[in-house]
Length: 412
Image: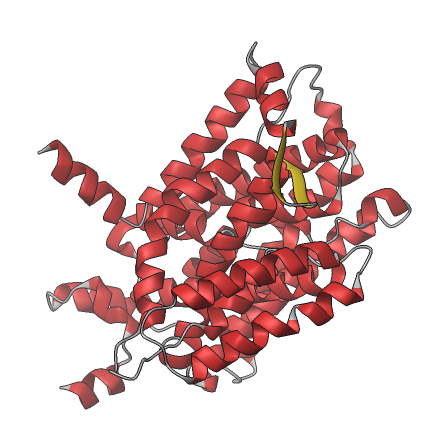
């Protein structure tokens, strides 16, 4: 019975978000207890891998952020590839609304942060922190609302978050490189060539590509570019179909998902969400970083996502998600302000100072919690649309409300 209950929990949409909340609470508790010196000491402890005279030495925190998170980005890359070739991103017409909404949801928060931090060169580098949406948290909160929402809204949020991840990856690639070492980039061409060859050969087992991806990760790390990008690049070379018609990409994605969402990401959150609250004053919300991140997530995201969505639908460029009311669309836009994992990750790339990162954590937690609570309340209290009421009267499930009537007719 207990084993079955655990399986049901881990299979639910809310599981990933709840585990992340537990990790964040644990990080906060440790950071404000007598265990904090051991916590900080463990994260700053050096960990070295050596081969002859060559060695790679980093603190445990950087191994988590640069190493474990490369696996997270490998999963993100696999998801992007699947959705582009077989899923929600396959048809260009289906990408327009969530794609433009994702772009607006990245630009407006960045502009808000930049406007608040414009006169401080030391803090302006964090402009991208409030631009990303945490898909696990956002979908988890939406799942708590239950069957009141049409499936079209979940598709809209998922597609928006996927494109948001792609945007975050591009931002990291272009704006967070430091001390570029061109010789290592040239060396990276070697594993890239062999990965391309294995992809073309449609190999059945991707182990060789993963090994080459590790080599690529080391070379990119040494080049000065954000090393986690190696995970995304490697994902794009995993064959979608092998010579027997099976999908190595699907198999790897399914195998990685539980480890990423229930082990790697919680470890990342545990290592990065430890806000030290000693000496906390409400006046800290006047701090440019805290204010920029919190307002960027809570205000900027909903303005960017809902504003662009409203304009596209108003001018007939795209159609509103079927079966959804404007209040429900707005609730989803508010949920997009849950930044958490990606925001903390970009914060770590932006600032090396412990004090500045503590400010980032306060801003991220404030903006994300505010977006989660308000977004949930809006969606929970929003009245049902006429389509939803009619579907319930006919005894149909809410899940069918992501299919428009003409499509239902065609499939009948």
